[in-house]
Structure formats: structure tokens, C-alpha cells
Length: 558
Image (cartoon, rainbow, N blue to C red; front, side):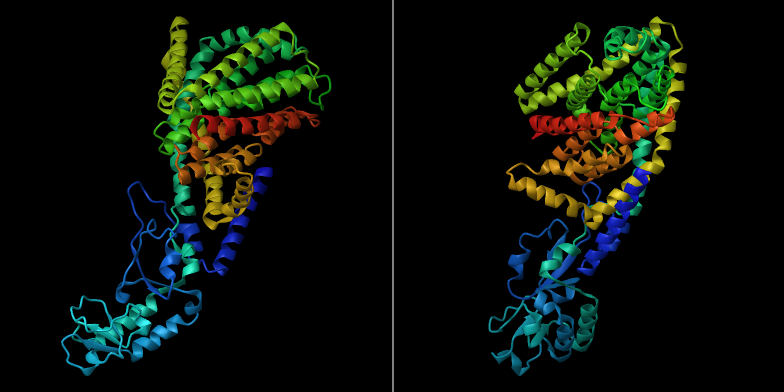
């Protein structure tokens, strides 16, 4: 229900802002929102010739984006598609042009009329004239005579009158409203959403197939035995070897591979197992809250889905967010674990908890220090080797374990990969809906209306304002994964997947879970009505993730 309202308000707000901008003079706004198409690599906007009438306009237009929009100035009135003038002249310029073309003299250059020697007459010409005795002007409204090589001057007058009636007249202060926007309208965005979803099929199928091999080979059980001593300290109310431990490990494993949708079935099984020993069926138990807090913090080692989205958007190095996202999700998980443990009065200084957490925290702190000491070129090289090497190591470990257990590897892979295909197809309607809504927000100008005041406040403080572009992703993430994903993809398309903002939104998207959705889904699945302090704890972890995401991105890429 919350997502439905958010989506509806996004569309209504975008249309309302577009209507306001239309009333303010942006007559292209509805066209931009519906049928505008983003330029392909190496492609340019259609050329538009503009003619200037009025003083001081060239200096006003100096800082506009006319060149990027392929608007080219011409001194030929007959070539111009657009007339740019002052706001005062615009009021009745079309009428002035019509009157001028009706009364102005059109004469052939070969004629010997007496006006040529008459210094009181101003000559307008669109051709090179070697006669330096002519007193010329570039302003058609000031001219007395149009000097042309055309023999039939009467037909030329009629042609120019027709051209004038078709020309758009724009005041210099509204030029930006008329420039084309390098962004897709709703039709192209709908097509793009399907393309993105199809691009996810291969990556999701690959890793869900590998996860199925790991499960059949017993790898999950091995991991469960390794971390069960640690988990038992965080879940003191659970009996030893309780089946929920296995389900939680499967859930955490899918999260570590960045497979959000694959993690959900295991998480629901874990929640049901924990509900069986919950003495108050309507009230969340401490164990359930601890599990959800750890699940929502989403410790991720290989952010598969985000890497796939970056790749589908044309990133040259989609794995570049591997290290910062791993560090960010660790901070989220650590925050969730510490806050929940303090609330549940779990002793964090007991040896079974303190040593693993302190050791891992120290290791990652040294890792961050090492990364910050590298020069940009060395950092890129190390990041590539570490991220890609880690993925290959996971491949090697899973396949080697499957061979050792003598399972049918390919059949296990195919069975798991089917889930990746089904997941990618299932999210197409959600992708289309959210991306179209986000596109409408950006194209209508509603997005700037929200972000620009925030950027202004940040600029006053002296801080860099680029991170404000990631706020929509961060703010919507606790409510809707699809909505946040839409903002992430939109930012990648607007600024580029390998830009600072493109990398930042990728890390923000993967730094946490959809808090309100997770609480509703998991507690709703076992009919728990009183969620107690689950939401505040999870939101604190989300906040820690947002802050650390911004910090680590500036540290590595600013």
C-alpha cells in the first residue's frame, strides 16, 4: 500500500509541475515527458538555426547550453527556425515582422535603383556584397531594403512571409526551456526498463545456479557449522542445532551474493521456525528481531544484482563498487548487531562475540587504510584484481565442492538458474512502473525542484553538493527497493554509470534493505502484530549505511 501511494504521488507531482512549467512558457514540456529520446553514443540533436533580434542578446546567451543542444546562430533570416529576442520585443514581434515584410523593399542586386546611393536607407542582405558603399544592417526590422540575387523578388517576399509565420519566437530568458533534454520520455523509458530486466537474466541465473550447487554439495551446512557458535551467542534463546540456524545461514548466504529475491524464501522459513518457539505469537520475539535486523543490514560480499544493473547500463567496470559496498554493508550489519544486542542486553564482550567482531573490524579498518594510501591508478588496478578474483574464487570453491561431493553439477546449476530467469521476468512490471515514474519526475523538472534547495543548503555550508543527487535513492530505499532501483538507474543514465554519482547511488542501493517492506512481509508471514523496536533498530542501521556510503565514495573516488 505504501509503495502504491508513493508511486501515485510521484506521477501526480510530475504532471502538476509539468503543467506549471507549460504555463510559464515551456511549450515543449509535454512532448519531452512523453516522446523525448535520449541520445545514443556519438549521436547529436537535430540542428536548429536561430536568428537574433535585439541588443545584448548574444551576451545573455553566452552561458546557455545552445552548443550542446546543436542550436547554431545564423545571420540569414530565411534559414532560421527560431527567432531569439528580448522579452519586451517578443510581445508583438510576429506582428512587427509581418508588417516589415509587407512594406520593405525587395530588390535584385543587378538593378540600378537610386536607393543604393541613398545613405538614408539601410540594406539587409544574406549574401556577400563587395560594394562597400552600401550601408548594411543585420537586423531585418531596421532594414529599408532587402538586397538579393533572386530575380523574382515578389515570390521571395511571399516565401519569407511563410517562413516568418512558421518560426518560433523565444525570449532570451526562456531559451533553456526550449532546448531538448537528453533524457527519455515515458515511451522510451518503458522500452529501456524491459531491456534492463532482460539484461539481468544471465547474471541472476548464473549465481542462483551456483547457490543451488553450494546447497546440494553441503557447502551451506559447512558454513552453518562454522558460524553457529557465533550465532548462538546472538540468539541465546534458541536451542542448540535448532533448524532456524540453517535457514538463517541460507538467507545470509544469498544476501552475501547480492541475490535479494533468492534470500526471501530462506528468510521466511527462518521466521516460521523462530515463530514455533515464540511464546507470545502476536508479539515479535528477541530472536526474530535480531534475525530481521541482521537480514535487513544485508552484509554483501558479491553485489550481483547491482553489478548486473551497472553492466546493463554500459559501465566499463561494473565491479568497481565491489569493495566499498562490502565495507558499507559490514558497517550496517555491525550497527544492527550492536544496537539490537544492547537493547536485548546481550553481552558483547563475551569471547565468542568480541574476538570475531573485533578481528574482522580491525582487518577491514586496515583494508580501508590500505585503499586510501593507494594512488588512483594503483587503486583501480587493485580493485579490479580483488573484485574479479573474489568472484572467480567463489566459482572455484563451489564447483570444487560439488565435484568432491560427486553431485550432478550441471543439473543442479540448471535447476537453480531457472529461478534467476523467473525472477528477472517477474520484476519487469515493477521496473517499468517505477522507471517511468522517475523519468516523469526528472523530465518535468520536479526532481530539480526537490534536489536544488537541498544542494543550495549544502553549498552554503561549503560542502560538495554532488552527493545530494544520491538522496532520492537513499531516502526511498527503506520504503521500496523497486523505487530506489528506479532512482539508481535514472542517476546512472543521467550522469553515467562510471561517474561519481553513478557509483554513489550503486553503493547506496546495496547498503541496506527495504526496511518497511521486510517488516511487513516477514512479521506478516507469521501473523506477528507487535513488532516492538524492530523498525527503529533497522532504520539506525540504514542511516549508518548512508553515512558510510557517502564517506567511502568520497574517500575512493572524489
